[in-house]
Image (tube, rainbow, N blue to C red):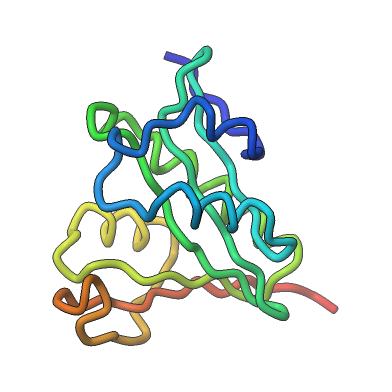
Amino acid sequence: MEIITLPMTINDLDNLNLDDFDDFWNMNILRSELSNENSYYIIAKSEKDILGFAGLNFILDEAHIANIVVKKDKRRLKIGSKLLEALIKKASTTSSLITLEVNEKNIPAISLYKKYGFETLGFRKKYYNNQFDAYIMTKYFHQSK
């Protein structure tokens, strides 16, 4: 299965069923993110099927991963890795660092982020649904000026 990543557009929302994904926001929030000039979203596709999507928010010279979401039935196929690689590549062109929050119990995601050079630099109590704690993970880019 060949997986490609492309910039996400409002039109992609017509082909997206949020029930295929766990604990994602709602369509209105996603639509708002796509229209925000400081956001950058991508989709992972195989032929016409959207397998996942991910987003960045840019704040000054920093990039923040808003989410990386993969269809429940398409996990463990390296789709999350492809999305993460594309976000890192995009962020590295304009940002000094990229950061994210991850549920402290999401061991597969934490392992993935560590593999790509993220370090745990902070902690947020009850960050998810006011009940689950999160690690703050950051990757610094070395940019010459």
